[in-house]
Length: 301
Image (tube, rainbow, N blue to C red; front, top):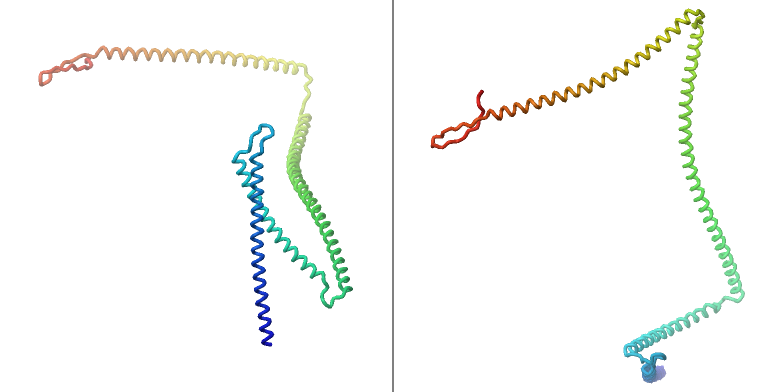
């Protein structure tokens, strides 16, 4: 056993050595390949740059400037970096896809103890359950549509109810006003009926107490009294007119007299002021230190 273990240990060491050598060789090969790729890329860029420098415009014949060439180089550099990133992502996605395919293959394989008949039965059950789920989803969609339609209908009914309530309130207010007017009309009608009854009763009393005068002398006397009354009314109207005219004349004369009185009073006041001004005299007083001062005063009368 010990010899076997030593033999296996030597084989393991030899395998590790071989793998290290293979890894080193692959690294060297990778470096050479990368160097060749960089050289080819540089040659490609140099060739493209050379072609770009020699390119001319088809109409004007102008060549590209150094700024434009620098922009092209920068754009190519960014494109190369993006391409490398995309390649890395592609390799990662391919590896992930390979893993997923292996997982799928493992799932597709029948487990131990599971026969093909059981697998087919489970598959059929899954299909039936999927169909039921699909039917339920369709029913849910139909119920959602019905719910949406019911919500719209309910919203419309609520809006209509609010409108009807407002209209009912307006009609109720108008009905209250009409009832108040009707009540007032009934009261007025009752008052009118009472007045009509009172007037009819008064008319009946007057008709009962009325005496027909048929004597010509009395009729002539009544006509004379009526004429006298009309003449007196005309006389009163004439006297009122004359009174108004006389009153206006009296007022105008009164205003004239008052204005004359004010003018006379003002003239008297002016005369008194002139008299007082003329009555002033100048008096000289001798002061103690020999100076004189004129004193203005009123002369005593």
